[in-house]
Amino acid sequence: MITERLEINRVTPNDKEDYFINISNDKQVLKTFVCKYAESLDDFDFEPYLKMDNLFAIRLRESDKLIGIILYFAEEGNSCEIGYGIGSEYWNNGYATEAVNAFIGYCFSTLNFQKVYASFFTGNDASKKVMEKCGMRYDHFAEKELEYLGEERDLTYFVIER
Image 1 (cartoon, one colour):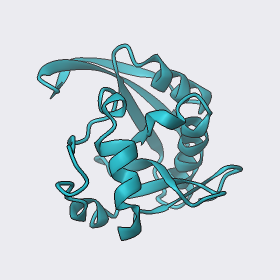
Image 2 (cartoon, rainbow, N blue to C red; image 1 turned 90 degrees about the horizontal axis):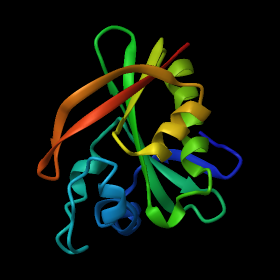
Image 3 (cartoon, rainbow, N blue to C red; image 1 turned 90 degrees about the vertical axis):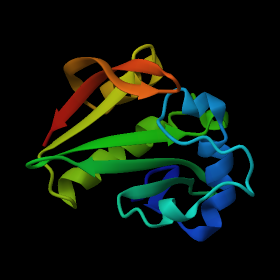
Image 4 (cartoon, one colour; image 1 turned 180 degrees about the horizontal axis):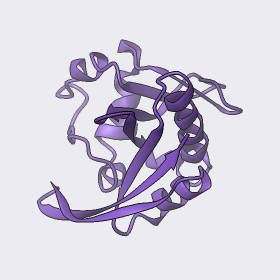
């Protein structure tokens, strides 16, 4: 998938350092995106991510640098849920909106899903705005649905239909 500023494609072994810096070691990202924290690049186990067929790199087209990730989880029937994370250094530049919009199109046209869901932790207004800008609308609220970082977290779900 190619957008004006981004390319979205498979994660490769060469992405280990960028993935570590922008996702697994970025504590700002980990407040809003569920991922295991890695303290050092040497201790970062990147192999499981390379084996995930549903995980994609979000790259800057100009440099091919991985600045974030986006993935989907197939649900029952003809819907999926997507999740995304962008390194905090790249926040507030519209990259998440650009990537999510392209990825929703991929979920509809290539994967043939009829509905695409996404969720955000209560208080993550930036992610809510991304979903709204991509045409997603409120679907439901799930109180204390997920335990993450030692606390029960509420999730708000948005959806878009084909």
